[in-house]
Length: 292
Image (cartoon, rainbow, N blue to C red):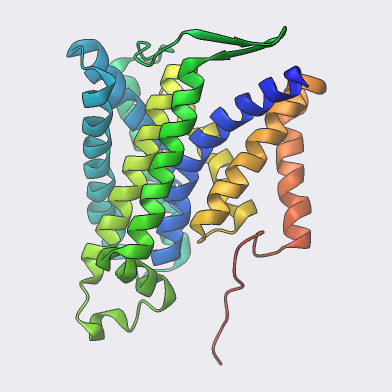
């Protein structure tokens, strides 16, 4: 039982990071019907911004994380303004190719600026070891990562459900063509969506850098897995993105613990295929209705 609890905590930590990335995918898809394949690399950029602030300016986490989220949000808004805005009415394939190109640009830009080496953010969370019983060992930083991530998710849910901008975002997701007729600035809503998604990805990057390691190409693998989590939960659904992320993380952690690390990705993608055969729109997703 202690081993199972240990693995559940490991899955919760990884699932928290996946959730913070997956929320960006699901929010952008909700308002634009666009899969932002550069989002995984925005997560990577956020991790390196946090790394630079922590190492060059010696910022404590309480200052470094909000500033990292703000700067990464500006990166996300700039990408939307420069790369995506003029292509909204273009064919979907044009947006997909542009998103992939933006991701490749970010990877190589970071590689040129900081180098290809693997790095780790300086430990800034309490890291004392908590022991329970004879075999359960929990590090305090893991608890903090889970709790802060959950707090950010709750804040996002309250923002979307309880504020005027959140209402506008839900209205755009429901019918973007009518929104300008209601006096709502569509460009502003989309920019805020990109900013929030990028800021959450930056928080995930900081936590991932604290718990694991970072490199300029980390966004490829983690971005795809977060996208899978969003699809499993039902892309376009905030609750679904969180559910899918924790499910995927649980599958990966328990596969590594009880089977083999070589099977981790195969089982994760197999889970995606199986669940989509049962729920084509994802567990909490809604089918897209076409008016004829």
